[in-house]
Image (cartoon, rainbow, N blue to C red; front, side, top):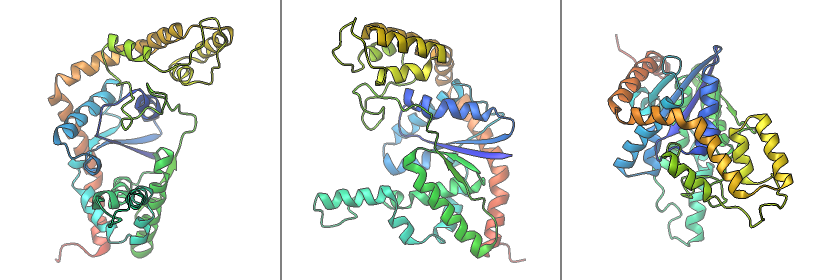
Length: 333
């Protein structure tokens, strides 16, 4: 079976862009009987960017509740919290001892941080850079290699990390024998990238996102605030615009073509936004109710994650023992 692994960093509230770009396609793929699906909450990764304990804790709850509310089946998908798998930090150290420093020096995130320091004429090019940021690709490699994932869906900015994972795995296999599958990055060019309230890509970093499960009235208000041009109600409009792309991400092909025609004929922006709201609300109404119920019962989510961790450790514990024996760490008699 093909093994597919996805990680979600727990540093914020899931938004519409996360849903369209990652959550919806991942849940759909998890239902493929020929796929073995792993999905984890990357709370150890979150520590690199966020040092607010309350935010990480709350985000972990919100992210888990969102995926479950949207239809993730924990009986089918191995759904776990990264920090509940103690074998992952151990594998991270073993891989760290096999990873060339020069490889880490080339990581985009590290180079960007150094460049920012140089542009600010800092006396120390590594000022403010933690070892968490520097070694991030190795922890990511451990996440992937622990379960020998064949495919890892990622955005373009993460492709380099998959290439590094392959380099690390190849080096380990060369020294100790064939233990790791070499994973493939999968970038889905067909997945829509939604634009946020201010016209830029929807992102937590820009604080321009529409949270996935805001109340119905708030959702409508936020959509009505989306930036459009000043064209009048009867003027033909170009469908190559963010609001049309968002509509298409939630519409059927027939609805999309009808809206494209209405754009060319002239349609008021207010009408487009109202219909966009109705479309999104219809898709998220029932999941929103499930989400609200889950958020009232975090102990239910915790039980699901613990069960998922136990399922994951049935694989990770014996596999780590195999890796440790390969490097010479094992019982003496």
